[in-house]
Length: 226
Image (cartoon, rainbow, N blue to C red; front, top):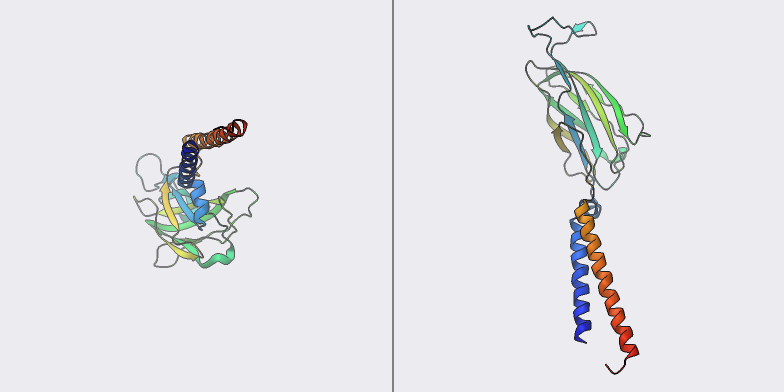
């Protein structure tokens, strides 16, 4: 009787431990939170060409017959990192990226999408008179883990680097649009081997306890004198 009680308690403790461990894993926690999230990551400038530098031969970059000093190229990645799709109907206000240290946005081009079947998005660079430029993001369907990358060509203020000063816009279910600067593309969270090993050990423990209980029950049937 006591042996059976001990086995039952061990089984309950193992089951609770397994649940707590599973809840601590990022993918499952993200699924249970059932939230909408969108993340914007801007790379550091891939190229900065200062045409005003006196070192070396003169460099001239022209666009629409205008000379472009401090020309730069950088990328912006937009990714749905939440558990729900984001559709065009979820946008209450279109998302805008307002830039600092940037005098003009030359062009914005969608150079990569995940999945590849995603329709090419069209972002818009806006250069209002007397105000800092901004990029207006489109409203594509973004399923969980869907993303697209924009290549931005811009003119910087002298000696500066591009910075996103503010992200504005409202999306249903999204509390805050996450933004960060990175030197590489963001990596998705995956199960760690140690977590998988721990889960495997817990499952093995539970199966062992269940097998032990069944074995004791069979032995009692064979030997009723106990």
